[in-house]
Length: 121
Image 1 (cartoon, one colour):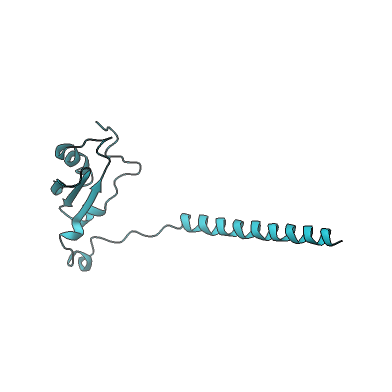
Image 2: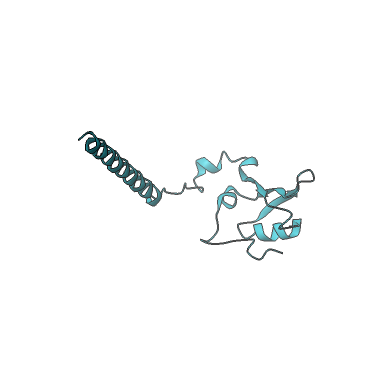
């Protein structure tokens, strides 16, 4: 009798855990499907407060696999918008800092599935 109660208790706990995992998966899927609106980057209040640092991104890559030069990086990054300046690090291989001409270009992700480095040297 006690063995049966222990087995039933374990089955109940297993069902409860499965139900909690199912609920967690559903919540995660709902959150993933929820579309958050992109900020209006053209609003004057936002653009009035833009600094040079806001238009700047740090880019990293594996230099042993992809030996990019300043020209190849510049060509790839201009697909997202006009590049104001690009500086490759002399201390850390595979690192560069790019400054776009506008914040809109700095946060633009490009067309869906766009891979600016899809034709790696």
